[in-house]
Length: 320
Image (cartoon, rainbow, N blue to C red):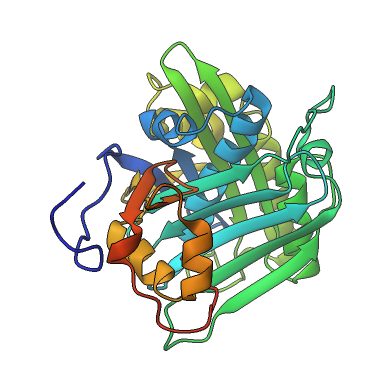
């Protein structure tokens, strides 16, 4: 515990200081209406997924969500946080992953009390009925943009494709993978998008030819294997060449990803300050209030005497 008062202590807890320089590799097919991102979390996946002692199917689901959010966030121009949140009535009632514009990545999966995992732990079987939401949060001075759909489909990729189809976004294809390997947990994603007929597309391509290019790209992308997606020894450029060399694939500058939990004693002290004296006393055990960051699973302990209530309890979100 630091000697600084809680509201000044903005140090990170003892969590991995880890980044992956080539976490996201953007690419496109020249003169064709296809672009995409290949996401490889590498050792970052293991650092994020092993913070909690979740069963392997739950870790795999969270790893897929992390790779997916990294791929979707890096396709946007924003300053803030892009997040995926899924809520259901199954063994995993809450799944949350978010990524900042700089590539700071974090995630959390909540297990229901005394939950029994289904024999076939698909994403739908784990989460049950509920909803999926994507949110772009650019801070208190900007309007939040959010889209919500019901959970449809067996896999997380199916659920996201349902979101894009109902929100009238551009057509896309999504392939997700997460598994424990000899090197630890790994997670990856291959995301393809059909872009509108504008700059960069061969003007001689008819609409029918563009549709055929998109169909071909989806067929080629579907040949990717989980082993190829998760193999650290197989560089992203090589993976993309294997898939799309006949289409003349071109690679853009890669984007870095990093361990991105943003908790601190100062943030949590601010939250505690919003509770009433009665609530603070109720939280106190042996003179101490303990708060646990759901993302990094670190306990923060505050002497009750150091926390002053600001008035009636006004609940604040700790995940922002």
